[in-house]
Image (tube, rainbow, N blue to C red; front, side):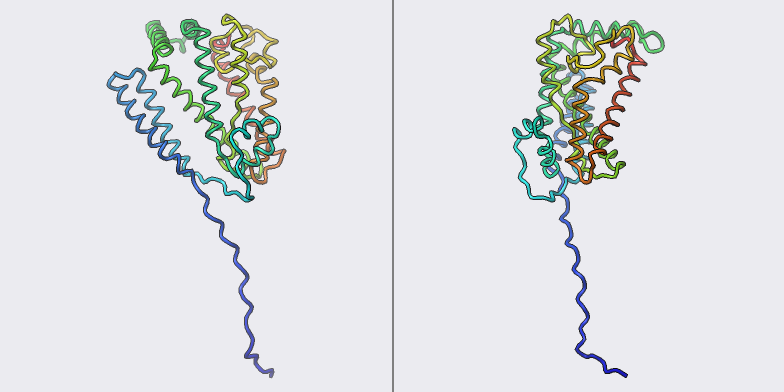
Length: 327
């Protein structure tokens, strides 16, 4: 029988991995969200009491924006893995054209998006204002009302409703208060579209086996608006379409081969095949690849192409239902 070893000491337990610090949340958005909701309530009451034109719709959208912004403020921000200083706003805007990989890698650790969103919002407002001034409110409203009346049953409203629609739309494009409300709706619309795009990108990246934070996937591209504003001043107002040119005047796609009145659905489908769209595909694929975690280049391209096809299908389906609006 062997003697017991009284000096035996059990080995120390293995070191436990250090707990990761809790991910911060964008709490700075909450005061903005509360302010938007409060302003929305005031505008909504003004619309109900009929001293703020279009106040009901504008107030409702402001309240919805406040709720959405407050909700996304609980989504955690990414925790930087590598010590890296955030790029300046100027470096991001210029670098996105000649060194996008560096910009997207920096956004992975520091997904600051407000500056870029402000730029695209301002450019969109400038474009919308210039578009209405160049093409005139009367021409825009006359075209819209004409196309609505041509839809036929069951889509076309009664003549009295069409005339009221004409009056309301002219007021919306001429009344200064309603113009400001329209600009606010436009900016909030960009925010909604950006949030939906970011959520879809995050979902599809997960399907491809990668990981990306919601704040890393917010897409921002401004080149289309810049070029569209420049081209608008080079074109005659008679060459601008009241509906097709509301977002851009660029004609760098295959839709120039067809007449929209003869082939409206094919015209819209071909408008998605052009240099600008190919640039968007490439930029989004690179952004998802470098901004996410374990997102391969193939996964970035796959998600970018899926989002592109979904957008094209929505546009084609809308045109198939209401083909007269693009002619």
